[in-house]
Amino acid sequence: MTLLGMIRHGRTAWNGEGRMTGRANIPLTEQGRADLNGLRPPAELADARWHVSPLLRARQTATIISGGAVDLPIEERLIEMDFGAYEGHTLEALRADPDMGMAANEDRGLDFLPPGGESPRMVQQRLAPFLAELGQAGGRHIAVAHKAVIRAIFAAAHDWDMTGRPPVKLRWNQAHLFAVNDLGQVTPVRMNVPLISDGAGTGDAAP
Image (cartoon, rainbow, N blue to C red):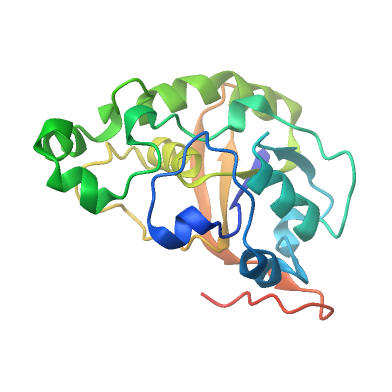
């Protein structure tokens, strides 16, 4: 069995403002870096192979929580969902703009599709070859990525169509563990696994 641990990047300025952040290549905030300092992946992911989204916020996060490792492998397929015309806007503003058709779009679940962007189902399709490669490789793996990417894998693992309440409420400062078979199919192992502190930093592993 392949064990995959998904970890979201730390906090950015747009996260703090509630803006939809897809391909915008913005860095962690100073507080975001401080929150991660001294944190490491959970014990279940000891000696795991790393896979990191190409976006800066994910690369910075991986560098910090790996303890300063260099040359962490970049995996282009882990890039965040493309939010198209929604990029940089808040949900509040999008829902208030009748021209955006946000309410009807949100009701589509896996097929939520920003104008000029990508749907969660498209993200699942993009990730399918990557997951199959992991499943065939075996062992333990860490992927440092993004909220929409993790949600896409979570939805596949729980057979959730992304309408209604999710099967589990995810905590975005924690790791989420999945089993991957040699066909790339994912099943849940354990959600909301706290990162651990090495005692040398200021990171907070609490929910």
